[in-house]
Image 1 (cartoon, one colour):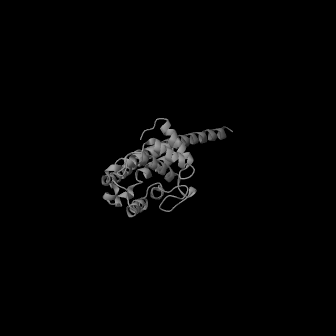
Image 2 (tube, rainbow, N blue to C red):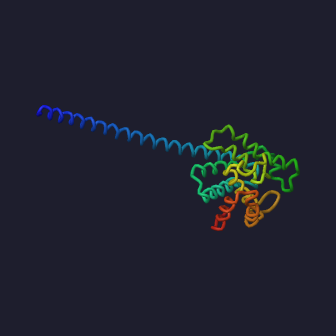
Image 3 (cartoon, rainbow, N blue to C red):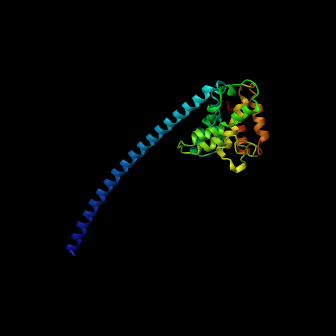
Length: 236
């Protein structure tokens, strides 16, 4: 019996030593994984900053052709992000909307500057060229591996729920939520600011347009969120 007890005590000592070594290894591995996770987070944040810098550079190239819309894409992006947050969308979807909205007019880089800055009414051919910008934007962006469907959203940002938009005449659920949000933000910003062919129509006219079109051209939840923002003091 004494021998059995001694063997048991020896076994317990061995197990205790093994447990201590195992705990040390687990603690060491945990520290290594924590450091690796922190390093990965830093690298991801660096990549996000680089991507954002590249995106802003592209935006400035587009706006250099059209001084009247300088800042337009940034203002649309700011409003679209505010609407998305008002709707309670998750952070990743908000980031998607921010990127797509700031690039939504990139296709205008292919439109002659004299058309973009024309002070009078566009003729049918000129308007057709303008309407091609969403499809052109898609072609420019489709080969870039964004973590979101940015090119498709840019393609759809002039689609309307009733099928009256372009380029495909999509309806309702055929249009992504992100594109619908950007579409509303784009309309409000465009109407409320000066354009080459007309002065600003004012924010009241812009909000009246989306209110009248709620449930027809525009998603009513998006419209309500946008109106609520301005009622709370939002400024373009």
